[in-house]
Structures are given as structure tokens and as C-alpha cells.
Image 1 (cartoon, helix red, strand yellow):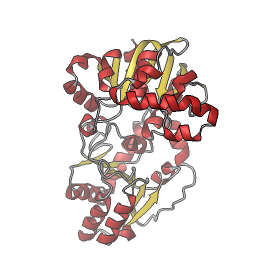
Image 2 (cartoon, rainbow, N blue to C red; image 1 turned 60 degrees about the horizontal axis):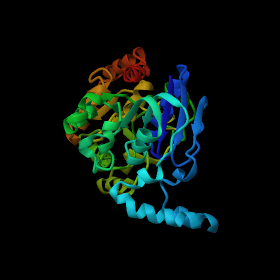
Image 3 (cartoon, rainbow, N blue to C red; image 1 turned 135 degrees about the horizontal axis):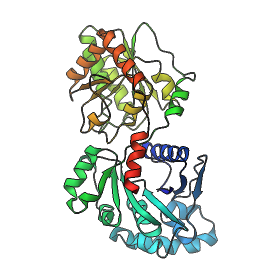
Image 4 (spheres, rainbow, N blue to C red; image 1 turned 180 degrees about the vertical axis):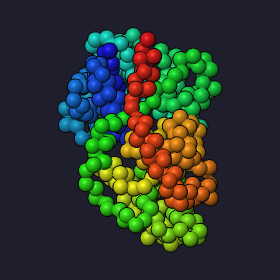
Length: 381
């Protein structure tokens, strides 16, 4: 297949990682992949050709900072363009103006607007020639603040690919007019790369006399709710459970708040706030199991990454979790309460036979991208 992947920029966190994994997997299966990052950021992926927007259209994301940094000759061009954007952007007219007449060269079997935003959707729907145009959706509609800037473009796409069945159900209910176009395309993962990184030396060395737990997530309490970790540690301590240590790999705006919660509850000795970790897999491999405290996930990358490393999980229930985790075999599903979370953690701590059974199950059922790739094939057919 000849596939085009379009991203608005390369700073989208999990979405960018997912796109890179998608490109790598398709290349390994013999597909020809082109990647276009709309803000001109270079992303080097072996076997993938990167494309760049040319001409005035490359200034689709023009702002005051870019104008200020430009030389005086370019300013003469950019200032009027910036005025046009300011006058038209709120009425959804800017993108039709800046991309008017622009067409990517060549034709593709499928083109994927990999990020749910107006520029990415508009560019793929109007500036690309492909047998199938696909809009990807990575988030749960329940937790989205605004979709009106891009959902009006749904009819332009042949398929609207949600990251999980659960996400798809929400969008089918909200957009019945395009319900027949909504399908599922799971995230792909760099399985071999994750395993290889897990074998490298970590910046952290765990205490083998303790039960070591890890959570890999950003400090975003609206969704990830990492303040629950010090609360759970306090509850476990109150139950007489002291022989644990919990590592939190990730940074974010709420990190300082969560540290203060741990200090207030007197459990800083049970938690290591690692901040951003370049290679969390080397730490995951040392821990006994992973925990996810989120109230919502579209399709949790942390869950799959833990499974790839054959580490059982305790995950607080969210819509669609059963698609990613086999309860009782790959881990335990806790309800959305600290009490239920601590019940599951203490169960894995006290029942080492169950923990070993889950580990062996994960080893006997190694994760692969086959299902995801077959979903892609069904979209293209």
C-alpha cells in the first residue's frame, strides 16, 4: 500500500508516538509510507519519506511570534497574512484561504489525518488525493471540551477511525449521520523497541525486599488523577502495609500539587516522583506490577506497554478498559475508588501465586500489532 500520514506537529505526545509506531509497523510489512508534519518539523523514521508543505500554505499556523522572528523582508509579506488570519480564523475561513489550490503530489491508497484537529482534517480532506481518506480520533467524546472546529468535516472522510470501540460508540451516538463510517483502529506499538529498551540500565534501582509498583503517566489530574497514588499509599499504610514503593514516571502541570498531597499525607517515603523519564521501560521491567489511576483513557498506551513487558496491572475502571485488559488474567480491574484500588493492590501483594500466574499468561500471549494492522486493511478494502 501507499500510505500518507499527516500530523499538524510533532509535539503531540502519545499521538506522535502512535504515528511513528504506525509508520514503522507499516514499513516492516512492506508498505510505502510518506509522512507530512504540517509545521515543517523534521521527524526521521527509517524507510519513511517526509514531505513538507510548500509556498504560502506553509504559514497555516502563522502567529505573532513567527512574524516577530522573521527578517524585515519576510515581515512585509507575513504581516498582511497575519491580519487576514486574524479576521477569518474565528469564522472557519482561514484554512480555505491559506490552502486554496494546494495539492500534494501523487495519489495514495489511503491518507490518514492522524490528529483530531481542524488543520489536519482540512488538509487531508482538501489537499490530498487518495482512494480512502481517514480521520483518526484519539479521545473520548465525554471528556472533550470542543469538537465544533473539526467535526463538521466528518462527511468529507470515507472512514472515521476511533482508537477504541468504546470511543467509537460515543461518536456514533453523537454523529448518527456518519455512524456507518465510524470504525476502530487501535494504536500500534514498537514491541521490539520496548523490549530492547527494558533491558538497558535504568536510572533507578528498586529495593527487592519491597513490592515495587510503577505508574507511567503525565501529572494531569483531570484525567490521570495521580493524586490518588499518595491517597492509596496512606490507605495501604493504615491497613498495616508498609513494604511497598511506588514509582511515578512522568511530569506535568499537576506534579507539584501531587507532591504536596504526598507530603500532607506523610507518605513521601513510599513514593518516588521521577518526573520525565527517557526510558521508563527499564524501570517497569524492575517492578512487580503497574497501576493506572485514570478516570478515562481512549486506549491506554501504558496498559499495552506494561503487557508487552509481561507486567501485570491494576487499572481503575474506565469506559472500554476491557478492550485493553483481560481482567483476572492480565491484571485486576479496580472500581473508581481508593478502597477498591487498595483491595486490588493488596491482593496482588499477598497472592504471589496469582501474580506469577498473570505474568506467565502474558509471556504465553505476547502482544503483537496484527489486530491493528488487520483493522487498517479492513479500512482500505
